[in-house]
Image (cartoon, rainbow, N blue to C red; front, top):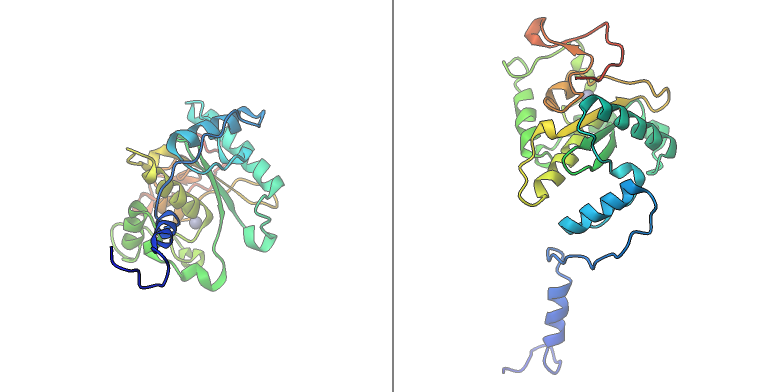
Length: 244
Ligand SMILES: [Zn+2]
């Protein structure tokens, strides 16, 4: 064995430490044992996360068991969104979370994601590399502003770049995580969204960008109707109905 050049006796321990702390190395967490939570949703979450070897996020609003009925599920999602707004666990300021906070539910895994809009100058700073491939493809189509794939509404520019709003950001995170679930190919239909104004708690429809970015996600077409220019127009009679 050649003499190590770093002056230590063998140099072995340095090498071992480096291997163990390498950030890309994966180690399944130790079994957690019985749940400390009495909340069945949290227990389910912990069990599922154990199964797939993820760090736990045992917060009540991060996980919900789907009922299988889309409209009942949307009611559950709206309730959970309300709890999240009241609790505000990330301590988002009103400036940060206005005018819209979204909850996106991955109804395959049960995970729920929340996000707010990107504001001010950053609303045009969309890096497509941050998007899941499904959303990246849609974003690229949106750049052809008069093309056949992206339907522009009056004043749509006001919303900034597609991908910078709460529901698309939360959907993006949900798809990315789903793609990391072993053996899973995510589909937009696996997800459900709810949008609301955190001050008034009124339901909100997706904007003209998000209804196209999140197309396929349950709730992405609420407040929109087929027909009209490009088959894509606001339903002015919408009464906060997210049913499908
Ligand atoms: Zn939007």
